[in-house]
Length: 109
Image (cartoon, rainbow, N blue to C red; front, side, top):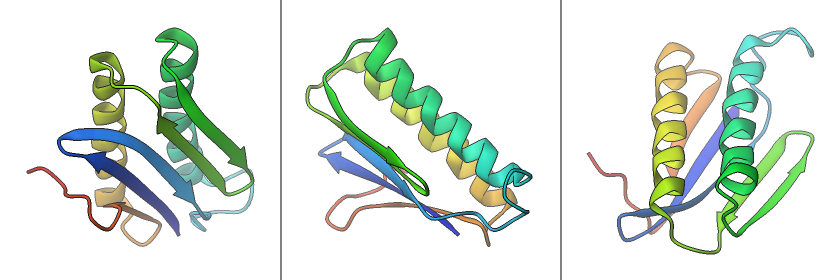
């Protein structure tokens, strides 16, 4: 299962982390993993390369994290879009993706 954890400070999303593997299909054929990875990489690249926001990122097999180092309305839009996208994937594949907020954070809505 992929665990997607978002962090917040007040109403601002401050980052996310993805850990694990979906286990929906064989390596290289897993559509859940590919969907989640593609969305998360697009969000991270948009934040760091297009918006040029200050953020710490780390990536390795089965792990991706992004932590904002500054507040940005544009970054919030990207992160809210990622949250919505992953939440919809979670509805379709609940045994393979879990979306949550870090302890002490709260989910709006």
